[in-house]
Image: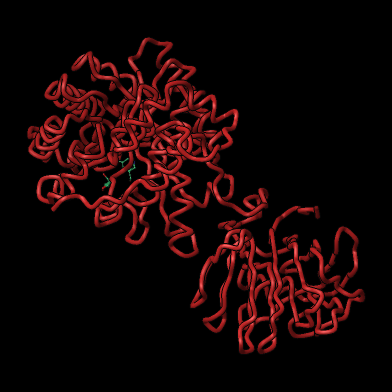
Length: 587
Ligand code: 9MR
């Protein structure tokens, strides 16, 4: 029944190198600042550890997880993993009104008592979640109670619950998710009864019930700069200025790896956010971290790698910012998550085996500098109108065989089905004819959108194979859509599905060297233009291209389609395939 542990191989390897046991490693300035002195002895101690909680430090004292009562009390593997890895727990549901308050006069503390006792037995502190939130309220708590009734219910609830666990619950998420994305107060039963002062009243009541507990405002999507973060900042600032006991801000961080891949959120952004709240004199905690994998396409090893980087970066941001004192994940095993099945958002898999994300978390907690999250070289594609994602290069084999390698030559996959490489695709010819393609896919709103695509391509001088470098939309077959390519004689051609058919644009595609090729095309615009640039010069312009078909699917792909004849030893390599709303530019 023991917890199955994966060795912290990557981390150990990094640590060995850093402590001087291996070859030299370049330590960036950032790294140096983060590492500080005395790492070597820490490293010595940690080398033998496979417990996440051992990676807690004075920089990040809290390494927590949300816990639910059923597995905690009935699944020994769950209980053992929780006790092994975490020094704090946040009851995920047990302290919510719906559980605690079946009726106005009744309190059911069974679940919460059990979890608090378990935590104490494991030497864990407890984060109380949550006293005032519009969700999971019992049916009896509604507007018909009237303003006084709602106010009395809220204050009595806070007083009773906080007092019961006085001295045993270290922090409370007193008010949860009070703000809309636009930065206004959410319209809930508490606001309707008391106006915005329900927030200050809640903090004052909690403080009176347990003056030793640290009290938090907790919310999601405040990691991003914008109206919501501004409103949370102003609210906490004003509450504190008025003497209201708000000691902490909880940044939930239900985060999407796609946002990290696309640069929608970055480590620096998270650090800036933490520092901004910290400037108010509050402690900052990452309170509900998870990173769902289901919105990220590609093979598992790719997605797990991105997830590892995300966890690493969050923990590293917390480590680097003095205001940040804890990282808590919302659950810890993929077996129990509030997110949909298949989202696998947590550091341990459903068998309690540590995933790469656990390595990432540990590395970040140790103060190892943030890792760049794997992404395409295009930093602007998240700005593409309506884009859902902007991932690394995706490739697949139409006929279920072939090989795709990453830029460094590492095999991304032996092809059966779809696979995804990192930034580059290299298709080696097989022994039978087939079509290879590598592409980046974007979804766009369609109408009138101008899309730029770019790829760096290497076509060996011996190659006489048919190649299409770009294709826009590909609902039926290769070459369906608009593509720019090279025919078997090396001429640059523009292929258009339907009418007009393939047109020869003129120049011969250079071979035997890397060429930067760009295509500008208007999607969903009958009579649009397609322009091809090779190494910065415009070599082709095609007008009246019917690109309307693209709007029906709202999908744009850029990449290569390569059709090697049987047994040809030639290969085509592509690097930095990019789709962008702005001209990416050749280098
Ligand atoms: O994960 C929690 C889920 O099991 C509950 O059904 C739900 C409603 O109580 O709350 C979930 O946790 C939320 C947390 O309390 C506040 N931030 C968002 C979390 C995910 O929805």
